Image 1 (cartoon, rainbow over the protein chains, first blue to last red):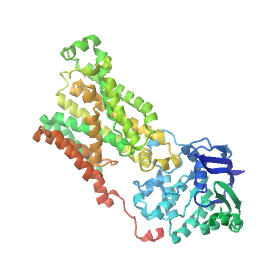
Image 2: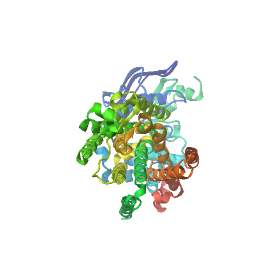
Image 3: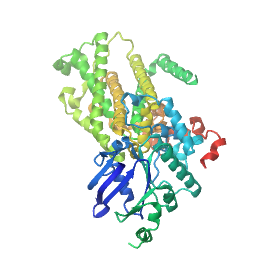
Image 4: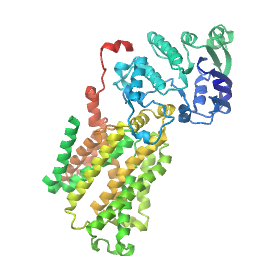
Length: 246
Length: 343
């Protein structure tokens, strides 16, 4: 059974049909890609999945549970997490604090809210900061980091939350080519070592072809094609969509 | 060790001050009140980033609840209303019992109100929250002025301070000092816990905090409750110190106390532990100097001070210090050796 199953999802904003009967499946443990030209409805689909807005029609199931009526924090606590296209970190807190507060909140009791973080959390935060390569900057304010480093921190925070599945909205946008390789490598390791299922929106074809096992392509709010990277790369409809034939 | 030494020195100075300068006892009592104002405002406005102009609501609420409990425990309502100040003073033990019960009741009321009001108001963000809380303070004043049971527009006299408890000034000075110290220590502890990081996260990016699964509503409500809890106790104490409660000028005094608490926190540095304490001290001392030496122009001078604070010290004293010497606040690259790893 798939970890995430989107069935016939539609969402419109006024007269704009942003998602038109989209169906997709993300099997447990895989890396799935989501591509499409600007304005094709990728981020809308992400927002529907994580509960930012209700869907007009269709169902979204995570771990076999219907989640389309739940709110953002509830879905996050189920283990379905997203990162943002415009990187979002807690700018006036240090990197370590950013990591600490990102611990899973699913089982948090009232009394626990007033305790300090146990030593394991500290060790885990340090280990993940090491993993994303920010250990030496851990005492700096997150807002003082460069854009690329903030992306890495945001990724680290997501790992700290121990999600079952991670939705990544353009993880390599605006990052210099050298750092991109580092990010691809870390995403693959997060999938292999931490067992996190990934659904990735990406515009950089080299990145997505390298990363994903299966790719869905959206255009004008509709699902245009899906298949293995090689199939998608050679699909005439996908090429047309990107070159503006539609 | 340095921390313990610093705290001990401050405690000694604070305890000795009213004995060394007896003529300033009431002024010192007001200073500690200002510290409580700034600290409790900063918990919500600074650490959590919810700029509230309505925190004075809890102050006024505490003032009224404490006074009403004291009155109804020991006096007849009719008699009290007509004779008020000329009635016999209570025996010290009764006065203290009434006051403690009143303060406890006001703290409970404030927390309950914070939970109820918070569940609605804390859903608003940014300017909308600020405007809504501004309305809260004003509405409370107007409503209080219409309730006969609490003296309506003509105000409510609080029980007279009895003989046998020492000097009034000294009593209230130490009482408010104790409150300020407890408030400070409780907030200091809260800020180092998970709660502190959570409200900081809400301040920096609430959408992100929600997306990470934080119980944001729960954290926000707790912060609002903590703030209300201490403000209500401060209000109850001040009611007895001032001796008379006017609904708009002392209890729900949004234009004075309500604005001052914001200014003091900003002056000292929003979102820092010591900032509000420093801000309250600077503000109170300056204000008293204006009152003494610029009498007649004191409001103008205060206005000018407010403009100077907002324009030149938007980060406050502690904020300025942190930007100037980040090292001292621990914000530094840890070792140069593994810096290459991040590139």
